[in-house]
Length: 341
Image 1 (cartoon, rainbow, N blue to C red):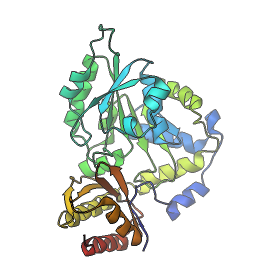
Image 2: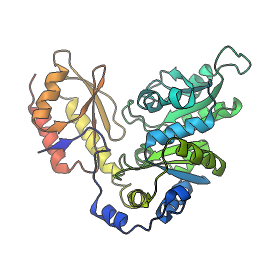
Image 3: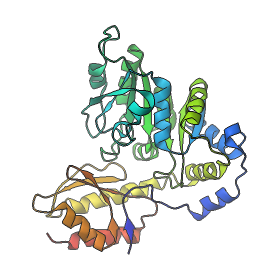
């Protein structure tokens, strides 16, 4: 039995999603004449209580565009040391925007208002970069799917307002956070200047992300997206998939969360596991005991056609998703309990 727990991006479109894609009314989105894209952008903007949204081929491009419109070369953004914008976007912060990162060692990828305040450079001290943006990530990837308490974000928003800093959310897995916490999307819209959301993580769409913000911000983002090569023509086929995912495949994320917590429960009872990090959503990060070799463990599971990834520094990651069936789940649990080291 083949099982892929590399990421929640490995899913395939459902039959309903394929029907929605095939029946989409499309046009040329570069000329903003694609009805399905325009409808998706309106839907997402309204969902988060913002003025406008812009469809992107990837979350990385959406994040990089947000950074570009919030900053000028030579300035500095503040983020956690686990942040996706710092670790997993190819150095785009410096390459695309000429901006450096002030890194904070938060808790599972989450940072506090006090930590943010401590990293803000005095604006009149021209020897250091001008602090202009704070980037948060929710849920956190490298932090194992942890999500923020809204009060913590509200405190960071206050610090940003007091120091004239922008606030951007990398919300690639915001859908998981909303389901797990019961929080409201509009609450996030009221706290952030811009928010990126991903439709291919968790929701099951094949491609696509969106950047959400004010109308003026999205007008700037449209120009940056063009410079980055992100303009697409009949993108409505992809937008239709994303819209279907929001309408029909969002609530099932709770099943992914349940399976992830059951994986944690089994893993932490195994003698060859040293530590399993807290599981809040659909990401399970764990470390092997000192006597178990990572290569041997990964090879043994690969022999059973179970795939997952190493994040380096001894961290192993499994990510549950909508195509990870209950039958596959039980198979993985059984194999894990039968392994010997």
